[in-house]
Image 1: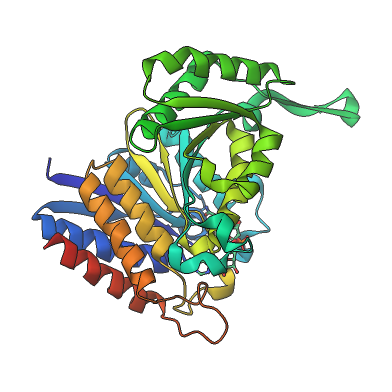
Image 2 (image 1 turned 45 degrees about the vertical axis):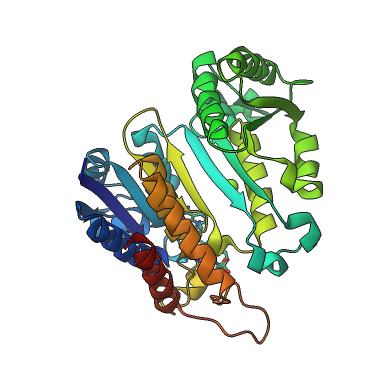
Length: 360
Ligand code: NAI
Ligand code: MG
């Protein structure tokens, strides 16, 4: 398979700045592999709203669905904060996730040896941290019905609803990811209180015999919140429901020190995966040429691995990022006081030339 189609959704704020560099990286990889890749661009978020009146135009959805993978920058910004929910930029993001049926959100959390001081935690706690949080993305408390005010507004209900099938498919993804790593799966729930968590735990235990090489443990979410900070390097793959995963993945992000280094992938059973840096549109630094593009580069690595099955190239991109950091290069968000740093284009070109060297 050498004809690949990737749709890039730059979005708003620094989104276009970082996805531009990611596009250059993809172009260079395709060229080095001697393949022809089609890289399309489409509108999403505030940029799409300004041009079409919708944060997720139909053409964007169609283009994404016809692709092997989608790379998104970021959406949102103060310019659109006054809009009602359905036309806000965020509606474009939730919409595309739903349209692509991406139910598993993968967030790798890895500390970089050269960047331990960027984290608020003690360096000795952080070395060797390398985990993936697998968050269920399309079910649970955020989507369950009913979800409304009741009793004339005097009471309210949100519903944590899961089918066995919804739990099974995301847990299977987590088991498979664990098989490709250190073979340890931690399932996080609240089974001492929630019925939904008891079914979650049951499904994990039912599936475990199919993955005999993976060691399984269950921990309660409140304990997980403490252990993520106290002993973060005990975790390999963590799987959990939507809301627990939302909270724990942001907590774990703090371990790495900068949001500018964190990638994510959202994948479904078939169809294109959606890859995006964890950070937002960063209106405070937009247009200054100082955004860190490395979260986007690491998202490209995940795209290469999960959607294009180019594992080796993915690892080369990750190694290139590591080696540029190890050589002392910093962007502004990573630099300590008085330390020199490089702009978006400069660090991008260092990493890309390192990648080229590895692919030759
Ligand atoms: P943010 O992630 O955009 O920015 C938080 C802080 O981190 C800012 O100081 C920013 O300058 C810095 N930062 C973020 N990415 C960076 C990068 N690549 N390089 C260097 N510094 C970086 O989060 P914030 O400020 O809460 O939200 C800003 C806007 O982004 C809002 O409209 C929000 O709704 C939206 N947002 C969008 C997301 C998405 O598209 N997935 C996720 C989070 C927020
Ligand atoms: Mg969150």
